[in-house]
Image (cartoon, rainbow, N blue to C red; front, side, top):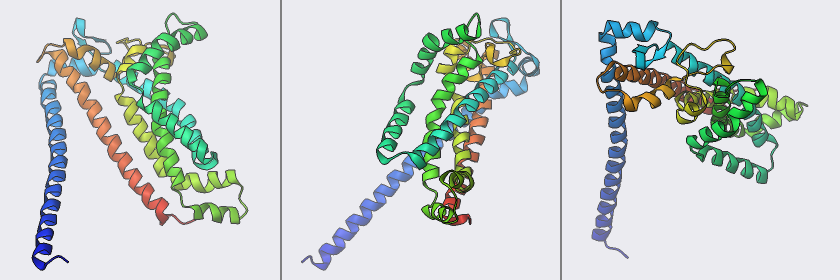
Length: 309
């Protein structure tokens, strides 16, 4: 039996250890916030000259050509290129990812679920440069041959590669959200005479809708920020894409930053223009993550019993 003195001493040690752990965790969290704040301030500070220089603003906002070698810094082709590539990727990945998520959550056996989840994790772990290399060597020649194009480096090829890269995000998050719908919802639907498909369509998917939407938004955030793989297959054309958009070479914003940042003179017009592109991407990503987080919180409250059938 321990004496009162020993018990008090042990209690003090436990309290001190717990206080040290809390301090360590708080320091780690605070450091993360400090780093994010410093990065944000740095991006804004490097973008200030764009707002102060009227001539540079005109070049950036009203020019339809991106050609830094000729001091043409129009970002409209870059924004258009990003929109086309990301839209194409989502059009491909959303139906495939959602159907796969439904199958994993509702139809697949436990052994098959493990196989699918392992495959999804493997796809998510592949470096983006590998996707880009496969797209460059394998996909672009196929696209050029099928559609009779002189080059397969275009928005369509970039969208396919990007769709494959964002599929793990949609599949994994959507399957988890669908699986988290309470079993009682399914049982009530079956008791009322609904079939398996009617239950999925009319009960499970509407309940899981906020979470699925959040998964799609997060996939959009991943797609809009992808760089290397897109750069390798997009064609890198700094002019406004013509119709049909998907078979024309494009130059997304991230690809332009990756290609030109290394050669941009510090403090020059190109340097600040690239940071302005970074600011646009930063704002887009911040909004996307904020919206997705809010939707996920709504989804959790809904699937825990907040929605009545």
